[in-house]
Amino acid sequence: MSNIGNYEERYKTFDWSQAKEHLGYSEGDFLNIGYYCSDRICEQGKADKLALIWEGPDGTLKRYTFADIRVLSNTYAKFLKDLGVEKGDRVCIFADRIPDLYISLLGILKLGAVAQPLFSAFGPESLITRLANAETKVVLTTRKHVSKVRKIKADLPALKHIVIVEGEPKKMGEGEMLFNLEAAEKVEEFTSFAADLETPSLLHYTSGTTGQPKGALHVHSAIFAQAITTRWVLDLNDSDIYWCTADPGWVTGTSYGIIGPWSLGITQVVLDAGFIPDRWYKFIQDHKVTVWYSAPTAIRMLMKQGEEIVKKYDLSSLRYLASVGEPLNAEAVHWSRQAYGLPFYDTFWQTETGSIVISNYPGMEIKPGSMGKPFPGITATVLDLKTHEPVAEPGKVGLIALKPGWPSMFRAYWRNEEVYKSKFDKGWYICGDRASIDKDGYFWFVGRDDDVINTGGHLVGPFEIESALLEHPAVAESAAVGKPDEVNMEVVKAFVALKPGHEPSDDLELDIMNFIRKRLSPLAMPQEIEFVSSLPKTRSGKIMRRVLRAQEWGEPVGDLSTLEND
Ligand code: WT7
Image 1 (cartoon, rainbow, N blue to C red):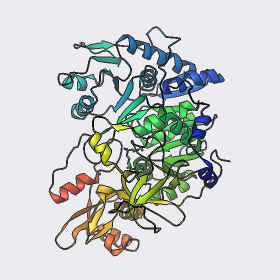
Image 2: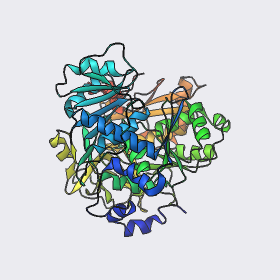
Image 3: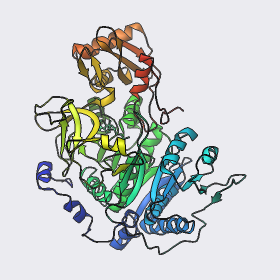
């Protein structure tokens, strides 16, 4: 039996007070995410339970119990306090997925400061926009990454300290210091800041598939939504070994890679190494991972490697798989059923929503290619593109919109009130994505608002085209964009990356065209296929269609600070 039980029943009877109860919180209780994810778990008798099993790039293993996490996050909190960090100050963590990243984040929250994790692969240009906008006071980083902070330091007047928490640079610069958690005197007791429901906790910059990155501000009460969705969507229980593949530089890596599992006292595993299929499978086998939360880009890459390599490993510990970040093609669901004996359950949410808002649930029938249904407590609909009134007819495409008011909803875009306001209309928060809802209430993703192709006045979503392409045995990845056309305004152009063992040719293009013609409406048929070795992606793995589109239109590509370029 799954934790959520009967979805329809839950949806009917749920209100957010149940999420508070689930975490044992009553009105007026002490609240602090840092405390809830460590001290409180220890108080519940799980001090000796493993919180984190960490595997480093060279295979080194480190293990931390909840008691360790409690004391070590205290140690960070005290260190930062002595440094002069105060409630509300922004403290950035700019590091690979080292244990300090996970532990210091809780320390920052215990202090009442705002944690701003940034993806370690960012270059100086990506860093400066985010640190300047946030007026960050302290950056925690490592020897490996400090040079990037040094390059921009002169332009960051608010930045007071650069703390190197791993490795020792040959020379220390001005305002720099070392902090070694293992060597530091441990702090047994630290009184966490008594947050209220609205105290800021995390500042996450959006991954920026479109426009300038924006800092979504979250608050401590987000934990209520993160905990209950972890329980009901990811179906986590006490005995699980959980692996979230996302980096805490992105919201998935904090909401479901730190707060969700630890608030429930669940053991998680972290792999601080890049994407290597063999390594991933071995990691699941070695640590007996039971629940795995990943992303379509990774899944497509695993599909590209084929099923043979899956057979080399014992993945029988796996019992539940979920996906987020991009549309999950039906093909990926079928493939994972075939390869792992389990489907991936798609979940939809955003940096702004802080927790899963539309999803598939264990026990509820999956319709492959659909994102599922709203989480209990979430009112979701699609709005008419022009009037912003809810669309009544099943199957009609509109803008995904949510009724504000759930605990993990972002409270602001940092210093960007205007754009924040522009996201709301007629009592709805508008996500910036398009979808339709079928007669059974399932949501079907169409595309990001800005990625939709307008051909001869008909709107075509890239997702259906890409999904059809992906079903062709030679196609590994694809992106569909609109290119200029005198008659139709735009026509569809598809970019395709092939699986190993396939070479681009006119014959193959023709074969793919014939293949997808059977699956697509004539309007959605690409006029052209361009073979590419890879697609432009954000560092969080999202395909950046706007870059391809801008190339076709000969337009400036805009902000590229999150573009993956290694
Ligand atoms: C955007 C949010 C939420 C954590 C990861 C990304 C796209 C996300 C799905 C899905 C189709 C999805 C949307 C959304 N997206 N999940 N299951 N199906 N699209 O957070 O970086 O803020 O991105 O990711 O376009 O708006 P984010």
